[in-house]
Image 1 (cartoon, rainbow, N blue to C red):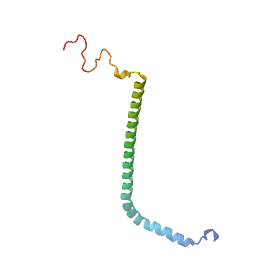
Image 2 (image 1 turned 135 degrees about the horizontal axis):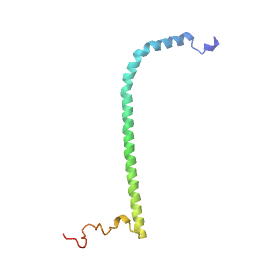
Image 3 (image 1 turned 90 degrees about the vertical axis):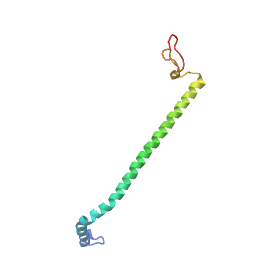
Image 4 (image 1 turned 45 degrees about the vertical axis):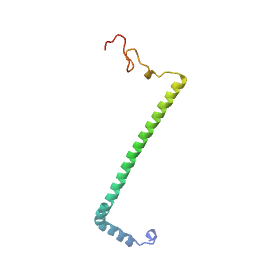
Length: 104
């Protein structure tokens, strides 16, 4: 049989297959018990890495937002434009000033 002549006899493969089927119920629980802590440690490391990555991205985002705000403030200051949020309306006086006609 040239079809099955690859160095092993059919009986050798058959014996290995039968042995695997017989030993699988014994070996699988042992392998599962040994692999569970490894899988758990891997998942724990992945979750910690994910959380650390989220924290680093949030910090970088905050840094860029602060830099953008500083650049905008410098551009407003250099061009002489007054930022609308720093101007107080007559209805809302600046801190430490009195409104005309109010009795304290």
